Amino acid sequence: MAKDKQYGSATLTRDEPAKKTVAAPVATPKSTSTRTATEATRSTGATELPFSRQNYVLMLIGIGTILAGFFIMSLDKEEFGFGFMGLTLGPIVVMGGFVLEFFAILTKPKNELL
Image (tube, rainbow, N blue to C red; front, side):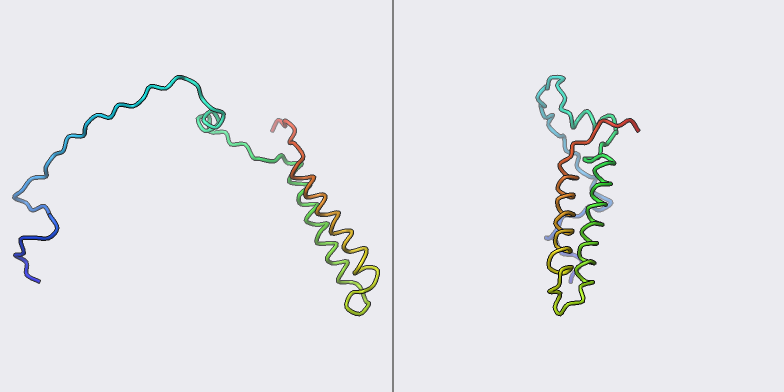
């Protein structure tokens, strides 16, 4: 490509100074001093978790219960898991774990002082 090309992208050289552009002032609407709850927490820097410690503990217990139910189902010695542990006990324990998870999510957190 030729270096003396006159068209193309405009680039600055040492001889031509940068052109200054004046930005027009933009009128911003004046707002009242009402703040939402999210703005209040952002300005203070304090972030609150959506669940309390009790909720997280219940969630972990629920996950453990679900895993225990699957483990119980795997212990069944009958062919294809058609025994009592594979068809009755294990699924009941798994369903109990899911009920516990549902309860853990919907339980309202108590106001705790950390």
